[in-house]
Image 1 (cartoon, helix red, strand yellow):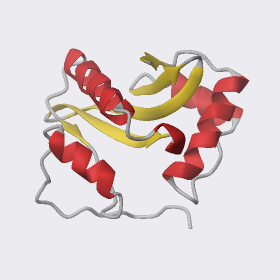
Image 2 (cartoon, helix red, strand yellow):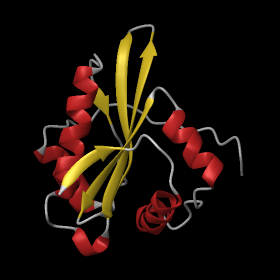
Image 3 (cartoon, helix red, strand yellow):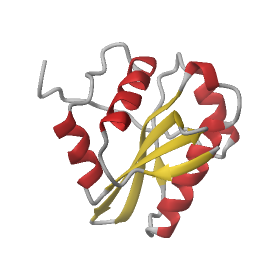
Length: 143
């Protein structure tokens, strides 16, 4: 199994990601070609994929932002195929993202996980992520 950064669009890639998205969130919209091309082209976004035997078995997105207080990184949309869970794929994806963030000069890496995702939350704690004492807010621009 290897972790690769996606640098070019393909229809096969789009289909593989669209197969994973419902396992992440039941209301996640499917990726269009245009949306996926935009994600791949975005300079601050790194789309990582776990590949085994030529097939996508997991993915995450790493965003690196430069703000007034320095560079920060954020991991989003971590998902491993249900058939491949329990094999350390999520751990490998996270490790790869942490190394990439370090190489890019980020001072910290944040992520969020719904409390119901017990296995994911346990993994993040085991990997050294600390729970932040903060209030998280959202303002929905689209309903």
